[in-house]
Image 1: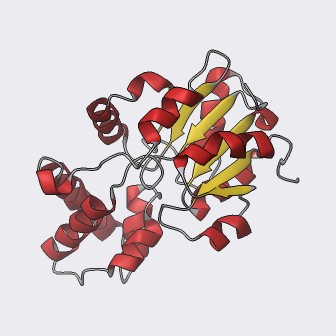
Image 2 (image 1 turned 90 degrees about the vertical axis):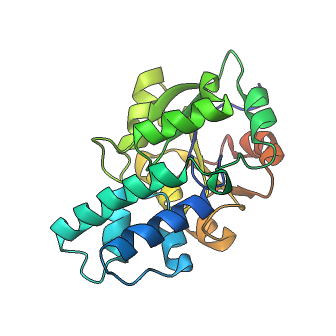
Length: 229
């Protein structure tokens, strides 16, 4: 192992899988089902990574209408499940992910996931891509606060007994970087997701990689680059 991290935690949507098309279609159907203006794609991309109810609330004209938030969120879950069965809405792994996970999955390193997805959806996607075997901890927002609250990351650390200095979060959004900062861990951003490189750097990323194959080198150079505070 060429780095000092014991626990490497990944975001899921936008980091490991390309789910943008499916999420955009699900939001379009769920908002239209309630006679609401369909949010622009760029606005939907901004909330990917948040817990579903939090994401929906940010897209509604009245985010404080909790009843409407729950109804739209329920419609989204239904639409997501239906669309996921259609070939045009599959969620492929990003290039290099399958090989990269095999390289990172060594006997002295634990891999985990911290995602805004629900556990059911996460498990289905992991099994579909045959990558469940790489992860020792799977943290979802079923019963946990949304990112950037540190709960997901803290739970992952507790499962393997990893300290903040030995943990790194890898993700594509500012929510991932801020969650890492709140948990006092290092953070590495990926440039192929839903938030820009400059945003990731400004929100705490010690490195931003352009390819999944660049992650091992980024881990080596980021080992000593821990958040302040």
